[in-house]
Amino acid sequence: MRRSASENNLITLTNPYSPISETYRTLRINLQYTPGKQTVKAVMVTSSISDEGKTTTLSNLAVAYAQEGKGVLVIDADLRNPSLHDVFSQLNQAGLSDVLVNKTNWQEAINDTAIPNLSILTAGVIPSNPSEMLASKQMAALIEELKERYDILLIDTPPVLAVPDPLIVNAYCDGVLLVVAAGKADKETVKKAKASLERVNARILGAVFNKMNRKDAKHISDYAYGR
Figure 1 (cartoon, rainbow, N blue to C red):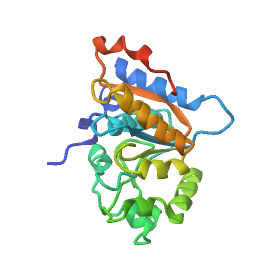
Figure 2: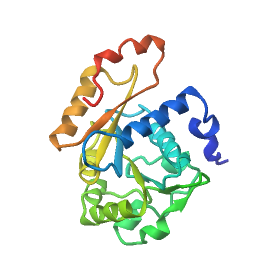
Figure 3: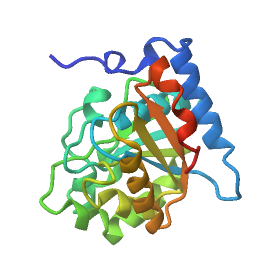
């Protein structure tokens, strides 16, 4: 039985006044007032390795933007192991991959969610050549068009150290959020992911520390925000 969106780790929806929800709103504000002249319209959310909570982070951040009244589109660019459709209780039928091969247009592929102001473009049919599809001219043109239509695009990708896809998607984005799970990826792994992003001139907006407890908190000083 498919769960409702409110059941799928969306604490910003189920408990909007909790300290964790407040943290997501603070993250939203930080992104809105990122130093520099470049407007942040498309943000890629990724991690070093799998199971660090990047999709949960992206989804709750999307709800925080939508609750402010922003027109939000979440895009599942993880064409290998998509999961955003489960978070927002959508069917993964016509989606990004289908748009990129002209099986449908983005207007038909994008669906509203149960959350006001929040829409989703699922991954669609899993292709045999995800990297090539993401590197296509169609992908570049699609993101530019969607930037004109929505206030903010939040794009989910595979982990940086797993496949080249995030390094490709970065080219279409105004910045990257790197999700780091306490006790999951070690310091050297995170540094390696950061170096990979820097090699493609990624604008790293910051790191989101996830799955932390009080014991982990003392290690925050080992990392620098945005580094």
